Length: 311
Image (cartoon, rainbow, N blue to C red):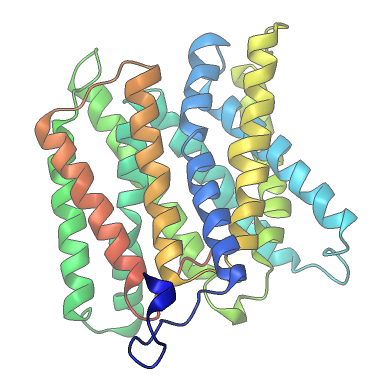
C-alpha cells in the first residue's frame, strides 16, 4: 500500500542514517556484554575460589591490557599521555572494581548491579548541584526521586544467607562502587577532560590492576588449571571488559542519546535476568518494582537534554 501512496499526500520521516543504526547496535551490544561481567566474576569467586580483589585485579590487568594493546596497534597512544589524570583514574578504577566485586561476594548479582548502576544518577546529580550551588531542574529531580524509590524497594530482593550484615555490607559496597563511578564520571565529563575515554579505560584500567595486584596476591590469585576457570577468566577480560568498552565508545560517536540510555538500562537488566536464570536468584514483587523504577529513572536521566555518560 505504501508504494501507491503519493508523496504529496503523506510526508515520510527522514531516514535514520546507517551510522546511527550501527551506533545503536554497538551500544546495545556493549550493555548486554557488560551485564555478563557480574555473573562471570561471581562464578570465578564461587568456582575458582578467587577473592573479590583478585577478580578485580585480573579484570583490570587483562582487560585493560587488551585495550592498551589495541590502542598501541591503532596509534591512539601517540604523544605525551596525561600522566596525572591516568593515575587518578587508575586509583578510581581499582576502588570501583574492588567494591563492585566485593558486593557480589555478599549479595545477589542482579541486586548488586542494579544498586551500583541505579545509584549513579543520584550521586552525579548531587555532585553537579553541589558544584553549581543550585537545586536540580524539576524533571531531573523527579528522575532522582524515582531512582531513590527504586533503591528502597529493591531491598525486597531476598537477603543472602548469613544475616542482615551481609545485606548491609553488600549494599554499602554496591553504593560505594556507584559513588566512585560517579566521581569518575564527573572528573572525565566534557571535552575539556583532557583524556581519551578509551585510553582511560585501557591504560587507566591497567594502572588500577597494578595497584590492586599486591592485595590480589595477598588474597591469592592462583587459578585452577582447568578449562572452566581459565575460560571464565578469559571471558571476563575479553567480553564484558575489552570488547564491551570498545563497542561502547565506537557506538557513542554516532548514536543518539536514547541509544545511550538503552545501553545503560541493558546492563543491569541483563545481569538481573542472567542471575535468575543461571544462578537461581529470585526477586520479590517489591524488588521487581524497585528494579523497574531504577530502569525508568536511568533512562529518564540519560534522555534529559545535555546529559550523556562521560566515561
